[in-house]
Image (cartoon, rainbow, N blue to C red; front, side):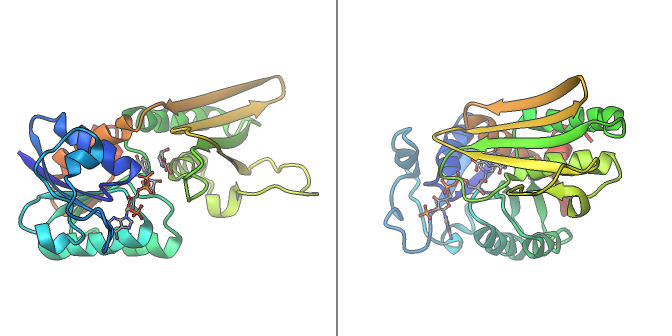
Amino acid sequence: MTRIAIVGVAGRMGRTLVNAVEQQADASLAGGIVEPGSSLAGADIGELAGVGKRGVAAVDSLDAIVDDFDVLIDFTAPQVTLANLAFCAEHGKRIVIGTTGMNDEELAELDSYRDKVAMVFAPNMSVGVNLTLKLLETAAKALGDEGYDIEVIESHHRHKVDAPSGTAIKMGEVVAESLGRTLKEHGVFERVGQCGPRTDKEIGFATVRAGDIVGEHTVMFATEGERIEITHKASSRMTFAKGAVRAARWVANQPHGRYDMQDVLGLE
Ligand SMILES: NC(=O)C1=CN([C@@H]2O[C@H](COP(=O)(O)OP(=O)(O)OC[C@H]3O[C@@H](n4cnc5c(N)ncnc54)[C@H](OP(=O)(O)O)[C@@H]3O)[C@@H](O)[C@H]2O)C=CC1
Ligand SMILES: O=C(O)C1=N[C@H](C(=O)O)C[C@H](O)C1
């Protein structure tokens, strides 16, 4: 039985994760953490998630449940996640991180824990997106050097705070790496005004924020006369939550290291 605690338990992903843990026979809901000082501390996390009372009260500090869980699932914000990662390393816990929007410095800090804790870190936990990454690798190798322009387009709900999405960046990185390019050199994240025609090797990003879109990603390979579009559409957060719970059960038995969903799913 993997005992799972969820940080950000009152958030969009946190509430969905409560549902996903409940559906897993060999995982138990060991705790839920809300922001320090939150009025939701003390509330039943089953009631927060809309599944009814479960007898587990939300706490506003990890210290309060340190002996109760094996794996922490964290879908919050970069600085919150890094503090929780340090806590897990210090207390011998495993961690699954879905948080996106880390800058280079924050990513380097996260990476510095790779020998101190077992973590799964992935911008998208859905099986479909992780399979799509494999398809993109194949497409990029076949098309990228044959005069096809590559663009990544993503759409998300109006509340999302980071852009482009972590998934879009990952898709761009996979395509770039397959072609011996880097996003630092070839990524184009903004076009406005007299920006001139596109260059051959650039990888462009476009972002849509609207309504309640759960998450949609398209990578376009376009040339004279045809275009190929590889698209993934999430219609429920449950797809991310199920993947995160699968990652938690998997990482519970792994040695220290930084893993991603390709490792969890055996897609490497
Ligand atoms: N990897 C993946 O598959 C996916 C990743 N994500 C990523 O997950 C992250 C969260 O997304 P989402 O659930 O939509 O966002 P929400 O804003 O709905 O949830 C984040 C939650 O974290 C809480 N929080 C903030 N600070 C703390 C703290 N110090 N301790 C405990 N909880 C805290 C917030 O509380 P409060 O509201 O009170 O501030 C909020 O409830 C984003 O980075 C998003 O991109 C999302 C979906 C899938
Ligand atoms: O914030 C979201 O909602 C999502 N964020 C992730 C990302 O930034 O890629 C994954 C998913 O698309 C939903």
